[in-house]
Length: 187
Image 1 (cartoon, rainbow, N blue to C red):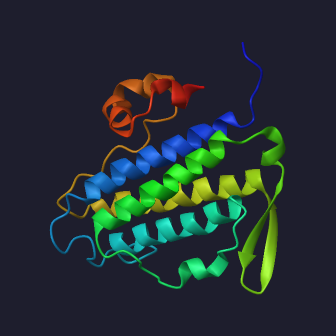
Image 2: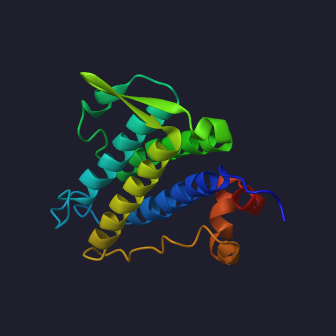
Image 3: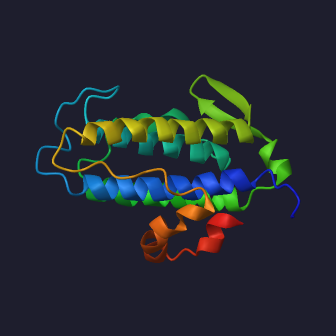
């Protein structure tokens, strides 16, 4: 059995995140006119607002993880996307950045300090803690969108078939569309 790799879980979570976002946004692309922005019961009052929040928070933290200083400027526009198509494209780009970051992780990088620019202060956190927080944030809000989809004409998609090897039979078409191999997710 190979040695324990503390970076493996983060790599897998980055791929899982991208696949879950792809599946959720593909479902949202099938919404009828008016359903994307329609008022709903959740933390954010619409699917549109929730998905915009996910992508802007991803920009904020991925920039910090990459050593950037974008900080709160990320949030100058609350809802940068009015349609699912452009939001999907932006989400896929930041998901790719997160995968690339996690692919380059080392145990030393995981315990390095990330500077999170928060306006008048800089928050100092371990990279592994910021990554854990980011993955939790994404899962939390994707779950809200999933629940909101139940009140639309679109059936909420399955979002938890990406981590274990036995789930390969459920993700093959999506991996092929992304140009990924099953081995990318399992190493």
